Amino acid sequence: MRIRSLGVIDDAVVELSPGFTAVTGETGAGKTMVVTSLGLLLGGRADPALVRIGAKNAVVEGRIAVPAGGTAIRRAEEAGAELDDGALLISRTVSAEGRSRAHIGGRSVPVGVLAELADELVAVHGQTDQQGLLKLSRQRQALDRYAGDAVAAPLAKYTGAYRRLRAITTELDEITTRARERAQEADMLRFGLEEIAAVEPRSGEDTELSAEAERLGHAEALASAATAAHAALAGNPEDPEGIDAATLVAGAHRALEAVRAHDSALAGLSGRIGEINILLRDVAGELAGYADDLDADPLRLAAVEERRAALTQLTRKYGEDVDAVLAWAEQGAARLLELDGDDERIDELTAERDALRAELGGLAQALTDARTEAAERFAAAVTAELASLAMPHARVSFEIRQTDDPEGVELDGRTVAYGPAGVDEVELLLAPHPGAPPRPIAKGASGGELSRVMLAVEVVFAGTDPVPTYLFDEVDAGVGGKAAVEIGRRLARLARSAQVVVVTHLPQVAAFADRQLLVEKTNDGSVTRSGVKVLEGEDRIRELSRMLAGQEDSQTARAHAEELLATARADA
Image (cartoon, rainbow, N blue to C red; front, side, top):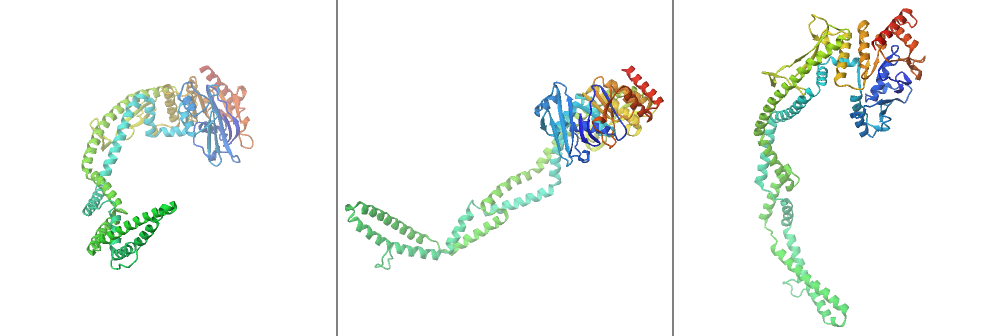
């Protein structure tokens, strides 16, 4: 990895060996930045506070060998990445303003793609993971992870049934708790539908009545205008001497007809005047009929206005016009059918809920049985590991229990609480020595014991769900003496099948490493390219001496350091 402008690191290159690499240095020298850098490469949260003061951004670049044929390669190729001789080149940039960019194999990708790769490539564990292991939910997840398909298969079936039950329960609660509101809604709909049915509106009726009311309200003026127009066009019977348009046009037509044979132009005009004459007579006839048919009956006008008032009452409540009122009625009728069917729906949902609860109880029992069987194997494997970590008499066990809940599911004659992961509460217990009662690790384990339990759990995982790289950030805190030697020895054995990187303060652990890296600051408080060194020979002895006694030149510390290295080599 190359790290630039990250925390105290100005510009440094970290070369990790294929086996066991120990990262050491004074407190505050920047060892944890190595862990942080790897976390960024694997999709960790980008905190702008990590950017070195005065720098625009922090950059971490890494070259990671990827297992052939694994999902990591497939996911990287899907993202458009290209491999470099079987390895992925990954970079992550974090700006001081908080923006973050990621690249894989020369292609820009979302940060989430890095996190997807992390699950198959690296297992990162620090002191926060130890605290996480104290949570019951994390202990259940650890057991399920160890069990693999034996738990995953029944858990998938249980989860599917649980989701269906939650959906049905939510719908049932919504119907029953809102029964009063739904009854009020049904009453309102019934009233509105009855009101509309009593009026019996027709589509477009309001427009038709508006036009009729306008006509009836001005009947006398309309009749007078139609009569006058008819007289102007066709003559007035009461005034035989009067001149009308039809008579004048007919005279014009006769005058042209007499000479049309002599000039085609006049013949054309004569034809057009003839058409006008026909049109005048048609219009005059329609005006006469209009005047005769015009209903000036005040009773009809009153009836029209009364009908319009009834329609206005509906449009004021249910829509802007009669068509909108009819649409409301159609939708209201459908909604009323739905509301009136609540009782029947409640019965259906209740029956389905009860059936699903019974089914869920059976699935929960299968899940509990699978966890119980896996818990015995997991506890035995962790106990065996603790024996190699200077805890030969410690015993680990799991307690799998349920909590009574009258609203829960039936399990072996009891009604117990249930959740999305089943009905089980899983708790990891530790008896550190013979005669000691098993107690929860949150209460019964010291800091050093908890570190070793955490390491033992991870080693067991390595045998069942291996990843290429393990990174431990001071998980040996609180450990010393013989226990520290055993932790170093166990990490060295784990490194025979995987790459192991450990950030440690313990010389007993660092001595077992295949490669030891020293992180040290310059006089200005930064870590530069020369600040991450591979220690060999005399330099390694001096660093182990410093870690042992705080004095690099102490002869006693040097002798102890040489003895630690000899022990580690002999164990290898």
